[in-house]
Length: 483
Ligand SMILES: Nc1ncnc2c1ncn2[C@@H]1O[C@H](COP(=O)(O)OP(=O)(O)OP(=O)(O)O)[C@@H](O)[C@H]1O
Ligand SMILES: [Mg+2]
Ligand SMILES: [Mg+2]
Image 1 (cartoon, helix red, strand yellow):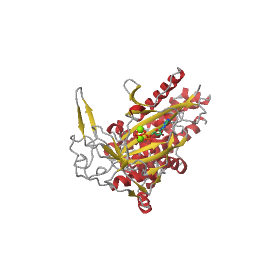
Image 2: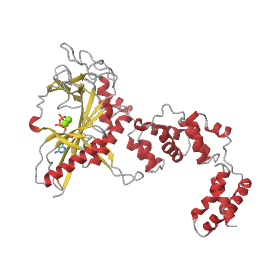
Image 3: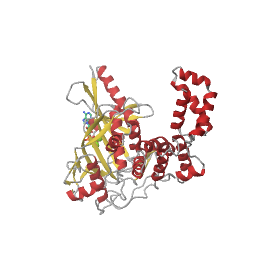
Image 4: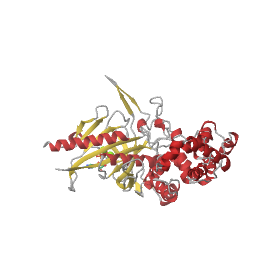
């Protein structure tokens, strides 16, 4: 029998807010353990929670970005369980009246190559609710240490419908979701710092069947590639079990990235009964239309809309547009340069090929905040190319100088005497010299080998240190070899 996979994701995202969800203490990653706590975080008797307006605002913004229905009123519920990573014996969450319902995330599954666009599709969401994070346990041989710094940090849980059908789609979903959230300043979504965490629910069913199979919930997925690997492994494992005549049980499994396999953590019988009930210490929250409109105003255009605009309005190829939108700093830099002037295609080339490579320091991504080149400077450089003052090749050289020492491109070109030479008399002499020195190549060219002529052009370029106007050289050589 042929099977297909069905996947639903639960994504937890830490919100970038000045203080915790129900108290004014801040949260920062990597601080002295148990230094960012107070009576509310520790749930000391008599302490009362106060709702963080900024956290609600950011969650509403996520809802707007993802096209959700924002609840007019949402309420808070206690999810009861005890575990040492939480100082209370419950977590404040939202059960039956979450802040957002429905909505979707546009994904693009990778195309056949980096320069070819893959198919786009909307993955449906079920809900988004707001809750508080728990602390962090560190286990040793005989005992464990607990750090409550993270406890009480605002966390949203984004739950998808079972509407993802492969490991690659799960990867595409998380990539797209993370990009939107980072763009909008909702969260930095650094998975290594636990700012974005994902559980994957996976089942398989015979192709053509409408009913869902028994689901396995996969935990401990520590990176977006980890999700892809874990989901792929789990789909294969489930198919294997069924093909051997076995049956699947509803369980929670743990992804072991080192051993590249999943192992069982607990089965359905061991699942918690959370005994949800409304938190008596917190009032429901209502979100007015005015507030929603206010919050919507601060939101950026979403990345795929930008990608389409770059392709349609600026005529950029997919390969450039997709790299530009992969990082908001890069895209903003490009747009700012386009506004200042210069051909979008040329600007995109320099940003994608030169700036992004120069500035992407490994995992950290692009950091343009310390860059010595400003958008206006790049724009000026491109104008020099368009005005035929310098060639593309020289422009690269000037850009490298700008990246190293700053400065205006016009001034650099002037100081270093890099202006392109279009002096036909001077260039003709050089071209004649080049043709004489490359007799063999010229003959090959005449016999139909079009590329052979590059040797002749190369000679002129070398002699002028790249300063010859390539168009003038081309035309001259063309004319002279056919004389
Ligand atoms: N048979 C199935 N196959 C694949 N995914 C499923 C299946 N049934 C449900 N799902 C997905 O599992 C996820 C369930 O998440 P949800 O948060 O609603 O419940 P939970 O995991 O039981 O609760 P908790 O938040 O306490 O872990 C959703 O993303 C849903 O789409
Ligand atoms: Mg859940
Ligand atoms: Mg779950």
